[in-house]
Amino acid sequence: RLCVARLSDVTSGALRCPVGTGELELSSYRITVDLATGRTGPIVLDLRGLEAPITAAQSAQAAWERVAFSV
Image (cartoon, rainbow, N blue to C red; front, side):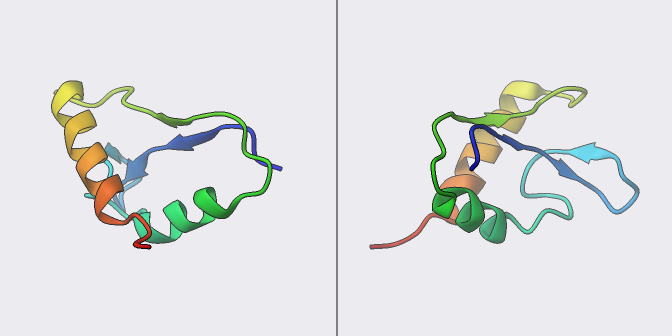
């Protein structure tokens, strides 16, 4: 069971970067989180240490929505 998920991304050099610009396979992560049974909490966007966190949050939201399921 998954209660809360943390969303963050890193470059190949293990440096944190805005979601959707690093090594994270975002569509696979989204599918896994969306299909997790019993998830009761949010998906927390981790912006620690990023330059321009507001811009990073906006681009993360856009990237997250691009990989959403289509029904």
